[in-house]
Length: 312
Image (cartoon, rainbow, N blue to C red):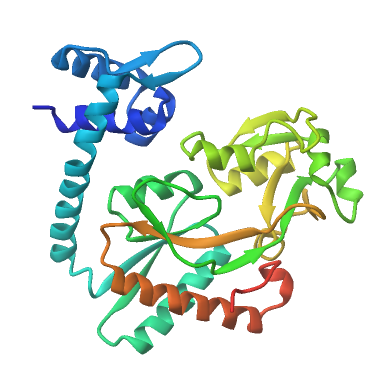
């Protein structure tokens, strides 16, 4: 019988195929993950992963074990979540996690509408940091998380796009790009691009912190950050630049940072996501009201607040 930490280490590594990302997801050290996997392999009696300096992949035995263990593990998760939901009376309280003041404003407005239309039930908004959204959702600290695309986490369901916003390049006020009316994705080669927390999914990092411009010019990596405020402080100190949504022009005006709109980048799209085991009725009711809230906020504010259009 595998212990829970052994089971989670094996299944997570099988999904990530990367020891560092697995350690980040499980909040363990890379050494602890490696030690745990070796222990599982000794118990099973055969290697479960092929490891080289370039890749990690499942062996045939590891793939069979993954296929056999995943369904009952998901069922166990669902059963535990149902028990937690019953204890917390989740039918009456839906905890919604968000990052940033614009999404917070949207969530709070949706909570007001929810209370009006569903007496006896309520939305509980919870502010999170960039790095801890997915772990908090997986751990059951929140029931719904509002995130930007791309998003393709296993075991999670996406709702409709709530609103979109133009992308902006946040640069130091003294940087030459700060004098521009607009910038291009090719201009990322002229800055040191700050690095988001490595706990975020690799596909998200590849999209938001690319190594190359569209034409293949290298982009110099800058310092890493954990929160948006930390990123803005680094930018203001001249240590790099970062791609942000247009909402920052309203909520994070700073004398040492200039926000320049992209003329060729797709908008940032915000969607709600939740674990597949979460009761659907309350989530779908929230999604509907969140879209209404986005439309109402756009009517009540100037276009630059969200830098895009609320989804009708």
